[in-house]
Image 1 (cartoon, helix red, strand yellow):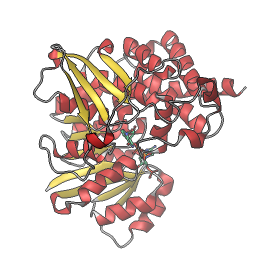
Image 2 (image 1 turned 90 degrees about the horizontal axis):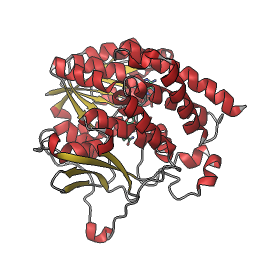
Image 3 (image 1 turned 180 degrees about the vertical axis):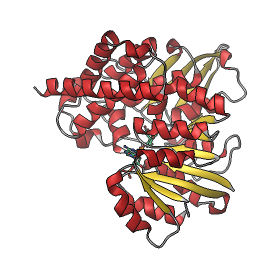
Length: 390
Ligand code: NDP
């Protein structure tokens, strides 16, 4: 039986992972499940999958978790240290699907144990890509992409030499506002930004899709994961979300990966890798679909894409600055304190400010330094948000 753990089990990716695991319960021995505030879901899944331990990220949720697990054999634990302890428990395969930089420390800990880490938590790679890759190499672990675009590129590279790659093209649906007049974007509401045309995802990534912060993170993720130059990475708006990515080779060949917009494909590929197994996802009928459309992204509409270039050129800890500022700007937008377009203005200001003011960008990529610069970026984003409100 394969020992597995799922971090962020109560979220959109976590639940899709559990959907796949639950179809073959005899194949998996579940070590740890983690969640946040959705205690009822966490406890129900932990009991049904007979997990050794269920962990909530928030200490104030421990009494509720204990109560929900009462009478079962599942242990209850809470808080960031408990997440790390759970990640240190031996497991063959670990899903990293916590949202935000909070996913970094448990993911690193799992890699230190030599686990295969299925990485949905793109923020980890954006903040500390080199550290994650190096940790995987050092401890004999393995990092598998779960983001649909990166899974698609990974699949397109099977049997290929990365030196034969000329470019990597990741597609973007364009999000909720792809056809809005740009002048209307400042007035976009939280409800409007929280509705994705094609994918059913958590609220934060859905809003990040509307602003293309999600695609900006994915461009950086591509650079970190596949170690290609920033100029080799392209973004293509593809409203149907059926082509997930394309790999262009030196001989002019362009290999595309197509599939239904269902994250269980990328999760299942990482779960069964290097094999391919039957997955419960819809099969595409291209004759019925008829046509696929593509267009270049409008950089004025999506300033986050330009900022991704700045981050990749500067590298070092700039990814952690970008992500920390983005996470706080998003918090402020969700709380109704700033407008939709203020988010990109805040991240632009924080990037410029910390890039010029702080030598920390060039310090060693350790978990402590990433955490420190993440906090600095969040404080700077709060100050910039206060300015936007004023
Ligand atoms: P959700 O918001 O649906 O789920 C997030 C998970 O993280 C939940 O289990 C949540 O717990 C938990 N969580 C929230 N805050 C914290 C915290 N501070 N510490 C620890 N755990 C926390 O997110 P998604 O599933 O949509 O996304 C998860 C990750 O996967 C993100 O990095 C996202 O970018 C990435 N991703 C998602 C895709 C998708 O289709 N959804 C596609 C590709 C990548 P609770 O809900 O119990 O509070």
